[in-house]
Length: 417
Image (cartoon, rainbow, N blue to C red):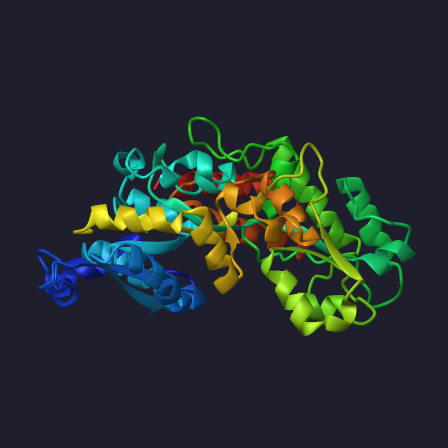
């Protein structure tokens, strides 16, 4: 489903005039109750929004003069609700944002530059977080939020099946990944080597980064038709063309891993660890994860969520205090216990619980080799355009260079809007 853009929302809001402002604003001018307590509102998304009240209790114990009113929003309509709030200059004090949403809202002037609060709350300093995660919080060089939890992409694989085709360890290079995938696919009809999700927005860009490609130059021009980017697209396309990656298969990643291992390798995030353990316990000892194979480097892409203070917040000071609390290593560890989301603060990863888990150690290493995609308001639209272009390549056998020339031109036009 195509997301509504801020421009569409703005137009609708102007037609509605002041009605939206009037409906959304309680306009609690002081924000304090009779006991002098300030209430800040927070929008949390999906499962996180439902779990947040549990951890907010601890913040309120430490700060009895602040109450946090958490509102849980389904991910499905959170984006549109946020844009409506921006257009009507209303909304919460604090908001959870997917990392790819930050540029769109920041470019609309909806997020607060937290620089003035960093000297007062050292927990907000960028040095406390993974460098790639910090990159997702910046817009035009200014911090408009803090990383909350993080994730990155790693290689999941059936270790027993890889061993059968000559790999005692996971592939470490592009060449080894291609070789292993073809050998696994050669096990017989209906067997494949790996699954790349062609609908995954970041996949093509991630391989381009691994090939040493810049995505955008210093002047903001796209570089999608340059050799490093084009060669990365050609590389990914080979998996579709030689049959080691199915074009359409109709099973999920866990199903592909189970049984005979129809698809014994895939690239995904840490959330799949719990998914495999719960849905395929019979595979214990037969699967593992590894850092991504590399070419020039083995960069992955950062995901997760950030916390930001809305520009229209009437309580930015109290909101900054809340962000600082959520950024403490001990708070992030408790949040991990509650939600299974991984900490964005590097200090949290010194905890014995994280250091003793072999799979989490692998993710920790990959986080050091992970990067944020360009923080541009138009990136979401550019990413969707790439998915369409790549589909014409792997499904329609379009010429890669010509398709990337066209895509680069389209992207340049989108980025100039």
